[in-house]
Image (cartoon, rainbow, N blue to C red):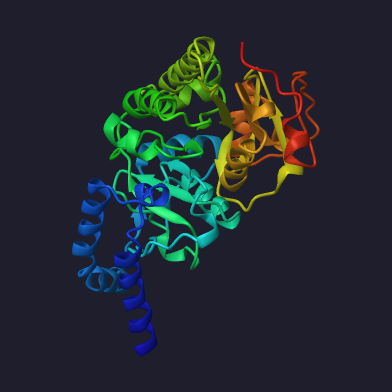
Length: 370
């Protein structure tokens, strides 16, 4: 118990001493705004011990939003609740050698896919801005010591908070989506995504990665028709996609002197599972929105992060992704996903499939958006 108290006290002291924030990360001469922020952190630190003790002594089962679970259960046959997660107020410090490295911002860090993105970035020792409407990363208790993680408020329906979240980052991964408490499909998957894209342009963020959905361009498909029952989410997702493509095309076509070309990647996963990642060799990419399947959220997270390493291959592209042995045409994929069926024996070739043993191989040959 004595060791635990010492550990907790160190966490509180770390919060006060480091004043971990995006501004402090890039400004070595404190501005009045930074000093004010540091003062706020010091004021709040006195309650860290009490709040941490409360969080560690209580837990509750968190039921996922009913509509979101229902949507995904149609594709993967999985629904229900997830185990409650412990909350932590500790902010790990940046390693001394990484103070000049710009973080990757994860929008929607508390969603199931967003959480996997943060975990993968931590494993790769990348500095992270983990953003959510609450400003807390729900899986912070599992973050290892020394991880470069900053927790930050970002409500995609509020352009001001979006601008603050995106500023000073090397890339942004948009993993947010509509929920009962977080906003409608129109507000989040469409207008919220547009807010993020505009903020990336204002801040000259080199790369935006968007997690969308397969079948968004096929309104006659069973998958689209079912999912669209929930707030017309498929309609709003494709509107958001189209807006991103248009914004970036206009930006890059009208660069002034010294202007910076920016890029995006839109990823359309099939039915999402909570299975362990199978890795790059199991994944198939497709273009044209004619084929889908199932894929672990952890594999989607890896695609998001790894696409940032090959902007020459993934920039200005939109592609579908799924495990190759679950791929099926949109007309039947919903039923095969519910049954968790492998589809190796059902040959359907779109002509745009991509496979590879490395991410570079997997991304090679993707066609740029028109």
